[in-house]
Image 1 (cartoon, rainbow, N blue to C red):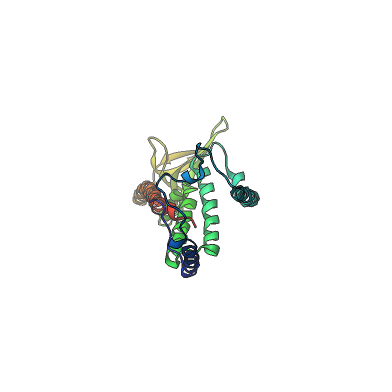
Image 2: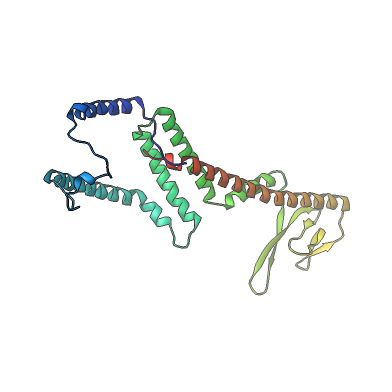
Length: 265
């Protein structure tokens, strides 16, 4: 959506109306000196096509440049202070994460300024602020993609017991942590991780985790079925996490499309 004029609040509208009334008296019909049809700014060119610039116009441009320089220096210093923390977080190899840091910092700055000094009509102004805040919330969620998975995984884990994993150390110094097991009798009932996993009742034999005869095979079978459901629920949780992420991206795209050109004052 392209940018258009924003509806002003009553105070701003009254101020512009008063200025318009002044301009109308200054440029009344009876004060017209001449009129012509042509391209814009043709009136400041002489007969040779060179620009005619009066002393007053030169002084105005000089003073305007001084003011612009002042504001450039003012906001340059202000932005160095405001953005110092953000700049320290950005790395040249970052993709979307670096962009998120910049967008969040700028939108928070915009929201703060809009809340203090915004002069758009009240409902319009509130909508600008609320959509900008929603965008910041989405961006901060997207900053850590793993949080989507963590949230869904924790929801699954709350529905199941606290499974233990098999910790294996190797002669070359490596180690691995795998499988899901629950205490049963003197051993563990569960299922190994990885390819071709063993499932059933395990005990440690001479320091090795070995599959042995269960003291209660029905209980072991129930535990293994529960572990299979747990793993399937985890797999489904990863799919839901991906859907959550896609939904947030779609919402972010819609917010930017509908409001990006409205976030100004």
